[in-house]
Length: 317
Image 1 (cartoon, rainbow, N blue to C red):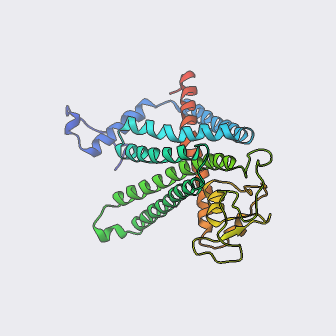
Image 2 (tube, rainbow, N blue to C red; image 1 turned 30 degrees about the vertical axis):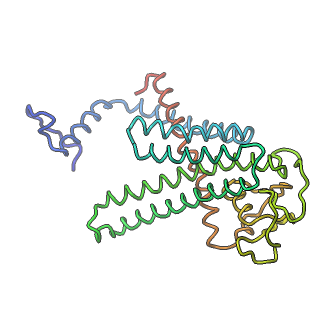
């Protein structure tokens, strides 16, 4: 299809035009509207590049100096911006999934903030967020597999259009990344609050309780087996600082809760030694990918809105 070929209407209405002619007509009108605006477009590109650079610098410095406020504002942006766009565009499927996830996660967060905290609450909270994390991982892999299958033409075996498979794959990837980012951010807040209430962890300073032998500093419960024994339900894991934890708790603390220090003494945790199994390394990499996605979903729309405001104030179209 040649988009530059002029459309001859000849007193025809828009309903009488073919889809190809409508597309060419829209392209023709757009081209005429922006004809001779090359200098203005160059200025808009410069404004976009400068704004992206300055915004990235500000976000990095904000994250370094005031991490908690950065986390909360980013989380609110991740939560509200997609919902607003969905309400405007009537994307009811996303709105339903958003409401379902928000209701369940809201109950989990409420339970984690109750005082005094129940002894089974930390493990219950970690189970939910670990389920969300693994579910998002599966959705991402499934979406990527569907897109690769469409790329190699496997959709023809099922007499399906490639666009259908690509849209389905992108949908799975989007939900996997979006729910994964939300789950990790909320679980980080819950991990801090729960561990501080139990007393073996303090975000700043020393813990308010001494860690007794055979007690997990994440959940405050007794360890089932020693680090040298093979557990029936779960094993016990010892960090390089000699503190021991339930394997499930320390994995949730590091991967889901985004913590890379010992919950008790704050010594640096070597994730490479902790997850030496090659099948577990993709989970760590996927967690890093979710951190990168946060910028695209929460901050990129705000930056583009700022660029639009600057262009409008300068009279650029």
